[in-house]
Length: 64
Picture 1 (cartoon, rainbow, N blue to C red):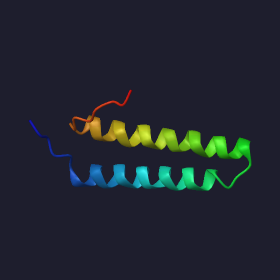
Picture 2: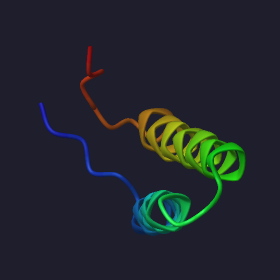
Picture 3: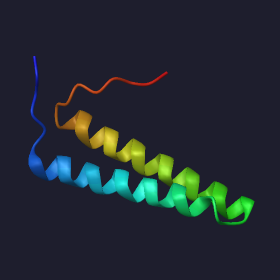
């Protein structure tokens, strides 16, 4: 069974993922401690995007 995620949820999840990607790219050019903080925030944004989609009914596998 395939469940469509509402467009506004998909859009918000995409925005969060893009921001996470941007933070990871920026992290490479920053001092170690600040870069680590950027990567941690990127992981939080990815998790938030995943949770939005799951709450909307998407069947998204969890990577090991």
